[in-house]
Length: 396
Figure 1 (tube, rainbow, N blue to C red):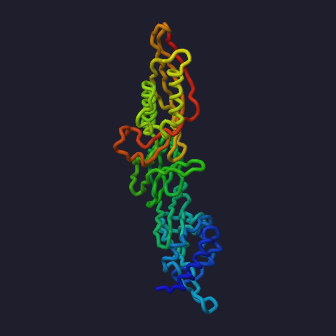
Figure 2 (tube, rainbow, N blue to C red):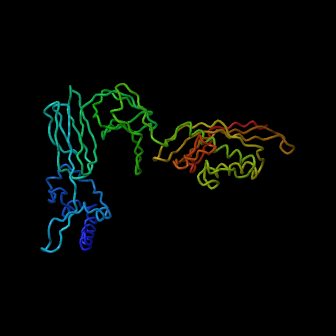
Figure 3 (tube, one colour):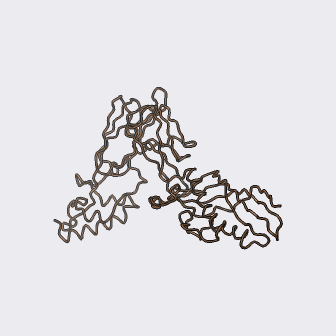
């Protein structure tokens, strides 16, 4: 058990270490030794490490775990010389194809010389490593990769070449398809066909969509080992807004607005469709249009206003949880015959508009919501101004 003075010394060392570790890799090496032999870590032992990758260190983890600190001697013949213990990793690589180049983090390691090639790389500094083999097989370009987190253990890395043909469907309609760490290509209308692709047995298949300046959205992941030649697989991401759901959401919004048009009272459960309830810009825009044509009409007020023929024309995903939904809708203003206005009929306007929509997983959990067709989704605001596409006036 460590005495108080040792604990204090360890705390001082680790505090200094953490300050430099995240931003100054080489400087932080001065505080580190290999955990198994207490020897300083040489630059030559770091040749495969990704130089852009930062350490993952926490002060509390180092202080509370004495196995993560090593006493390597004495300073000034008196004080214990405490260093941060780095547990080395290793990788046992196997490749079933001759004459391929082996790379670790884009650094060439060797060329395979048999169809049962193996190589062990030892004393790897903890971090993320991308193992890749590439070359030509039967005059076809082959590249197989596997990304591994090595955190002080021995990993078996299988880079065997396997040829597989299969189809991918995904609700990330224009996402990028990945096998392992290799980007294969972009989906078109949610589909991609893989033809005789060389893959590794432990590779994972997934679709990922990127957004400028925002986190990416990743689909479910499927292992190559679970895919057979000729398969069709589905790799959907959670919370992606589908066309049917968008139609239900916009319809739900106009159902609330129809209620307001009939009663001029704020509808119940408004926040199940509109974020912010009656302060929502989409809601207030249509509400103001209703008021302008009824209670606040300068000439003749409509006796009723109905909304119909909602058609979602486009859904654009702007982040993992936000969308813009373009749609068209028919506004039908009905005017009845009366003594002041001896005419009757309808004014129908077809409008195009766009709404900003967000997805909240927590709200999706409300199994008692009456509006289950679009639960979890809310209109956050209008997206620009509506435009009148055509008008039919039958008031006579």
